[in-house]
Length: 351
Image (cartoon, rainbow, N blue to C red; front, side):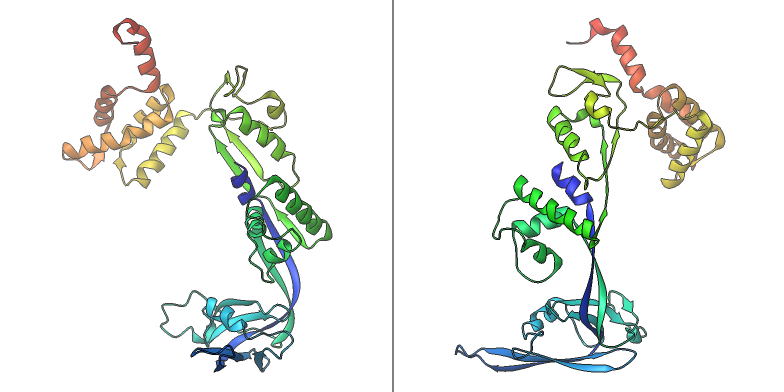
């Protein structure tokens, strides 16, 4: 439950960075003998040519450069950058991001291209606002197992104690402090997700206790509960409560008023379901299914579609008629009819 709620809450981080951006026109690694000896070679520097609509620029990444290190070649290989791709390189960290294939190559029959992007405008060396979306779970994992680097996840990880291997409550509290600080400073924006819990009466008292605490957090997702139960026992206790939800938690919820489907609405829903499953049925059979749905349940009426369709095909017809639905309805019981039958003949069944 904790993991799902953290995965659903996102953080949109905006940073203004100094970058080199453009279409790659040249990518040449220059190798030298390994200073440690042996037969292998190492990359001493990398020559990168970038082009924009305003001009071109050649970058040389070497150990003598202040910002660009020859290790940038590993990042280029990891991003699978090649000539004709549009990339940007962060000047301070040397991080590389491939944005896509330049649209000047759109006429080529390149099946490997993910997407085509326009040639960047302005200078190659510029200041750019970088927007990155991460989840709170991503931040937990990044800080529990820090990998180094200068991306936003690693930067936030450097604020914590390094080399943690477990996501603890203490770690989450520390991360939440940093997240709230980023939000207050306007650096980041909270993007709340939606946690949908169906059959909420199946949760036990421990889950409800956690949800009660999580809902009070400023970075909690929007939580929607769904249940079809009335008064029932809260699992893990002997307390009976409406919908099987503790009263103190229920008091914090907004309960949406729902109404049962009318016969016309049921007919419309069954018609849509029949079209989805490529089942042909005339209006009379659909009307009968809607009538059955009002007496039983919509789910039972929808389930009659498939056997009615099979019966129609056995009889050499491609469309369901009223007689098919009537015959199939006599073969099966819905939940209410089955419960009534068990109550009437209780003495004939094993206990």
